[in-house]
Length: 267
Image (tube, rainbow, N blue to C red; front, top):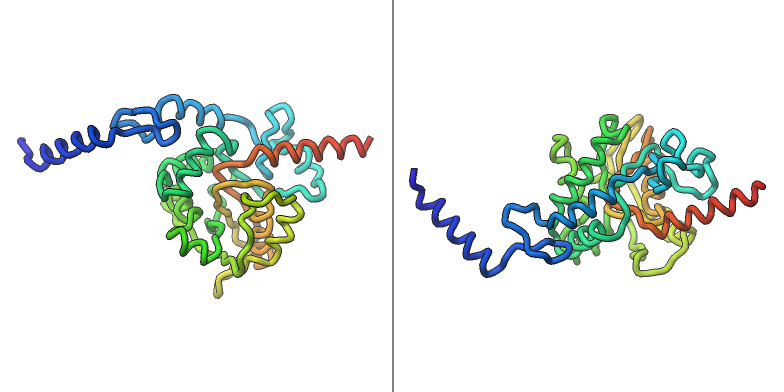
């Protein structure tokens, strides 16, 4: 049946595509209107980067031949200073197309649907997703949220949990300002010192025997996530898992170097 409204909508959409043709959010290449905001080449790059094996408790990318029972050597031996959790799901490395998507998301308040689906897919293949009682976004300081107008981790969590029929719980509070670590070249210990004691639990929440999953966009040294996990465990959480979009390569290289020093020391 002829529909004037549908015809008008289609015409306006066509005019809009002529004036502002759809382009890939990563590389800027022209794409078809039906495409999912990325070109085929960038989708292939992301698929390649998310297919690697990672440690199931710290997210390190070691390759399948360097993991035993899905854990790296530092997690198996409980190496001192090594950040690990009860389980960790990570989409990929913080570089290339994935990095561009995350930066676009944080700067322009877009792309949360795409990134949420990527994280949801990774969670679906994890061993712990079905055991989680509470999904908790890692919060920003209130002044930073006001300046941005949104909280990235909350948007990401909502998008990732939508298909599971779950919703995030704003359980944590950041009670003081901490430096934006990506702007400073701080060591792992300096980051840990800066974030120590910064989180608090929302009043009236009982975490005893609860399994909690922290959700964040990028994990670098893991200092922020480790402090958030410590706060949750101190409040009674039985297990703390982590779900992140990306892990930085610099942290992986640093950890591998530290593991090498440890092995030489043991010899």
